[in-house]
Length: 189
Image 1 (cartoon, helix red, strand yellow):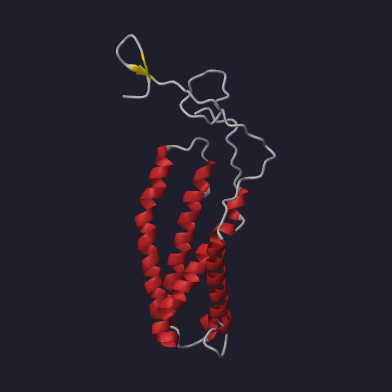
Image 2: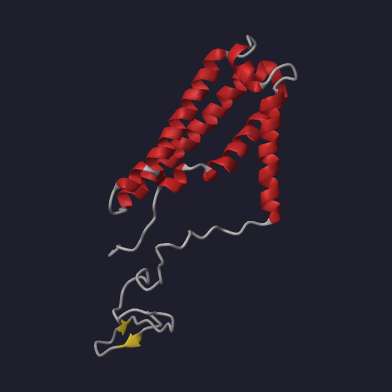
């Protein structure tokens, strides 16, 4: 133990020596209550570099190009509904896998927040779901590849990866994350 103040029993006592600590003198575990909080201040957005913004725009533009042009005769949506070359069973099983993944993501990110106190059991639930979600995502990717292979052959793999990356770029900007109010004003833990 180092960095503490020696006491009579031979141990050390932890003290705060920060000049910015504007508390009443209580020795609290964290400084959540000492941070000035304004209820009307907007949440801080991370600053993104122009390179990251350019990458995101390229992923989204590529996905729009793939969806709009499809196989050069019709767009991707029309192909998915009406083309007989697509293997339907792997396509539907892949869609079921994606829906299960979305359900697991919604449960672990939004519905677990309804619990008043964020305990370690919720962290364990979301972490223990990661291998299942990863395996389900890989299986869904393989099923989509099998379903769409007759149309694009070897180009199916980069096409699906591009659509996946565009979804990963768009997902953080969907309104779902903004519905959750994060207010630590009344925390006492």
